[in-house]
Image (tube, rainbow, N blue to C red; front, side, top):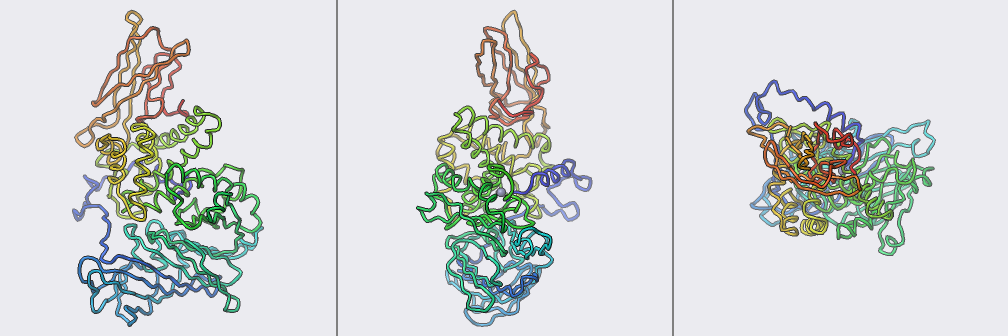
Length: 595
Ligand SMILES: [Zn+2]
């Protein structure tokens, strides 16, 4: 998922000074002493397949009738209860093994009696009949958008329905295991008035117009995915073809659902989609995982959401010039591998989804600039990484234990994971960049491909990813992950430069200026220092540091014209040059795009 940056920054800004007055330790609820943490829920049943039949008799109302049929296998021991998350459905009847079953609906949990209990390994079928009024949903779950009579497009003059499941909102419109640690195949069979287009996950198996005025759409996602990636969009759309020759040859449907009248401009702004698919397939060494790639441009949607095979996009994306929205398009497309094919097992590992998708924007920038030569490609890539670091330099002064780290289960609502200061989006991208710099391109991309290959159709944790990179690089990354992933904030450097003409010695004194205390030891860093000379030549030194202060002294042939600390953002440490050598050193970095 990606939301507009301004909204994210607002959340950052509001979190800069957390209210800690009531608690000495924010990890514990001060009244009860309870630990503030979220854990992946149990999976007493392995959910294999869901068939969801929905009927929207009147698109002018935010209401539908549904039948959810689940096939699930008991795990571990005999199971007498099947419990599902269910935040909205009004359940009228439940069947288990074809026979009416007792159920209760409490605290957004639907508990179904399985009698006799399902034995370990036994597969049961449960059917839930329900109705749903979703008029109260404003941006999550299933959302109804009213028609706008003044709209220039006939799409705008008709109502629209779309879903937003992440993180745990799809149980507002169908009962399910609403947590990412469960994957299943799904089918949606949706009946709506025939003027509307219906898009969902996977492959369109059939349509049926047997009933006067109505049309039934049968979509099937034959590759398992988590409940939060189930999507539904109903609206008046034009469907445009974005496939290139290779996609056509392989039978991959690449399309966009766009407002009627915007076909031409949408073909321009979304024009890079097919090329991006090929680029990521090659870079990730893994074929595009789904039966189609649709981008559904939905009214009132904010940013994009990477539902498997059918991303939902804000409809503003159909306006603009070619390339303008490539970052958002690349982000959601990369999620089809990182997030969708391999899914974070719980939301504390969200950076495996969002860090990767954000990082993929930089990878696309690098690829896009590559025809202009490797220097330009590197420049474009680093400009993107510097942007991510810059956003964190201002907002993320986190330290332990007051702030939860990027990977930490310290949250009460999974939505917090998306907006925390030690943010999985920009920090996740910076961490991936640092890993690439540390172990090199070959080991980094091989390790990432290994991760996709090993955990595809399944879920993964941060340590799973680390182990893959360690396998392909031979480098122990435990300390790096401990410092940069499981700990909030960034190392911050104050630097004093000096030049001794008599000995021709350059002195670089480093001080780590972030908080250092019993919870926050100094970082261990290898700091690259680039030194430039008047004849255009340059030399790079690496200064190891594992304490509050460190120092580099090097004898040079001549006085440098410029000293640049960490020119390639290898250590992503916001830096202040407190004592410059010349006026050429920027006072703070990354203040401008990296060189
Ligand atoms: Zn995302």
